[in-house]
Structures are given as C-alpha cells and as structure tokens.
Length: 141
Image (cartoon, rainbow, N blue to C red; front, side, top):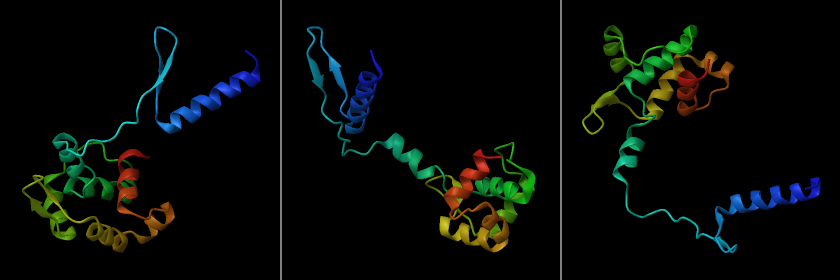
C-alpha cells in the first residue's frame, strides 16, 4: 500500500466515524451500514441518579477545593474531617438534601464564596467557574 492509498483509507474511516454510522462486512463480502443510534426517550434511572449527584457542591467537595486553594495540593482522602464540617456548612450555607442524602448548595452560591475568599488564586490559575475549580482540585497537581 502506498502513502496515498493509506491517506485515502484514513480519510474514509474518519468520515465514517464522524457520521457515527458504523459499517460491517457480511460473510458474502457485502458492506452494511447500521442506522444511527437514537437515544431512548425513556429516562434511565441509573444514569439519572448518578447525574443528579455527581459534581454537585457538597461539604466534602468544598473541603477538597479549599485544601487545594490553600496550596497544600490535592486532598488525599475523601472523608470530611469532623472539625471542619460545621464550619463549611455554616460558611457556605449548605442545606441537607433528603433526595441526595448529603449537604449541598447551588453552584452559584458556592462559587461566589470562593470568589470572595480567593480572588487572587482563582485569577492566577485562570479559573472561571465552579466546575473548572472542582476539576482542578480533584484531578490536577
């Protein structure tokens, strides 16, 4: 196979991938294209439950973010220290959610507290939202 043929095959595979219509070859050599996958209109309770709880501002997430913003690096544990729990709940205005079984607050409310406490650190890191801050504190450095 020469370079031009390899380039043509790669371009065809890329176009097929972007269409999200996988092809498969039958035993007799014919090529078939599958229909695009259409998401089901029925709600999936497993993914809905995970989506409702994941990345919400909880007391433990706020503690991990504070740990990172104070310059101590990523927080090694997942548990919230008992002595910090009451302070975080009061300072950030967290309320207990029966549905999620955790202390939580709206992202905007928590983000405003972080902006007030660490404006220089957030500006130096170039962080513009709560989601980005949570990602940095959880996975980076």
